[in-house]
Image 1 (cartoon, rainbow, N blue to C red):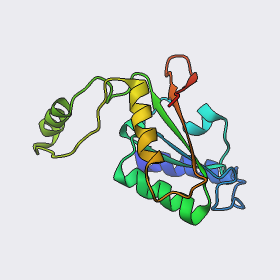
Image 2: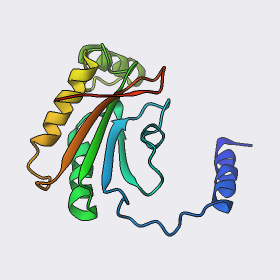
Image 3: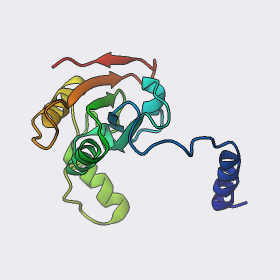
Image 4: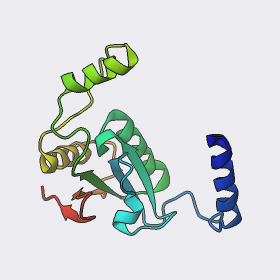
Length: 164
């Protein structure tokens, strides 16, 4: 069997047990979550939210990028979210690295020198504070939009709130 066949077989089993077709497009908890793409956790599992409860945006580091903002702003304006939970985690691939190091690695595997700011960071809690500030100062969210920030420990499974 190929990987494609594996995916199709897994999807068939999923579809046979699927009972979520009636979920609404608006998140039931008016919640958006921005977190890292790390494969060691799911935002829903960490926060105890169910399918249909929240929009989940994942990117490298869970950083507030232009594209993450695009998704969050549309989530708020079109689909009624009024709160964003931001989660960065321990042992992140961006933690303790530099743009130069990351650019060199990308160039090594692709043969192309990237001009991307990969948004690496040295302080986990400060990265959450910085991204919370970016969300809080974005004028495109409704006045009642709230933000919460956490760090997640990939070794213990625990969240820790990050205060402003």
